[in-house]
Length: 286
Image (tube, rainbow, N blue to C red; front, side, top):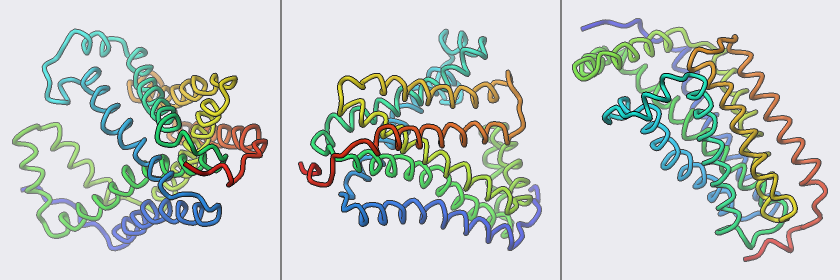
C-alpha cells in the first residue's frame, strides 16, 4: 500500500477554517441581510433551491451526458465525439450550459414562487441564496472532504481508498494521489485565493439576480435576461478555454476575470437598477 506524506496540523487548521468560512459566512450574510431589511428568509431559500435544481440536478448531468458521456458511465455517442473533436465548441458549451440553466432558473423563480415579491430587496435576497448556497455546496463540502482525507492520510487508511479506486479506474487513483500531494502543500495563500474568488462569484450571482429580477419586473427590460445569460456564458467560456487547453493563462488571470466581471455586474445592476427602484417593503407581500 502506498504511503502518503502526513498532513500537518497547520494544513488541517486551514481546512477547518475554510469549512467554517465557506459554510458560516454565507449563512451569516443571509441572516444579517434578511433581518436588517425585514426580508423573508424563504426568498433566500428559493435562491438556494434555484442553484440546486438548475445547476446541480439539471445542468451538470445533462452537460456531462452530452460532453463527457464516458465519464458518466454512458456509451460514447456521435454528439460527444463531435464536441470533443472541436475544443473551441466544447469550451463554448462549458460556458453556455451554466449561463442558460442558472439564469433561466432565476427567471422561473421570479415568475413563479417569487412573482408577488416585487420589492427591490427580493433580487438581492435571491442572489445571496443562489451564490451563498453554491459556496456552501462546492467549497464548504470540499473543505469538509479535505479534513476527512487529511485524517485518513494521517491514520494510514487513505492508501486503501486509493487501491480500491485503482481496481475500478486507474485514472481516479492518480487523481486521488494528486489530491494527497495538494493537501500536504496547502497554504494560507490557497485559502485566501478561494475566499476572494468566492466573494467575487457571489457578487456576480447577486448582480445576475438583480438583472433577471428587473427583466421580469419590467417587460421593457426583458433584454436583461439574455444579457445575464451572455455575461455568465462568457465568464465560464474563458474557464472552458483553459480547460480544453486552447488558452493557458496564469491562474491569477482567470481569477481577475471573475473579479472584474463580479464587480461590474454587481455594481452596474446595483446603481443602475436597484438604487433607482423606489419599491419598498410595502410591496413585499404574497
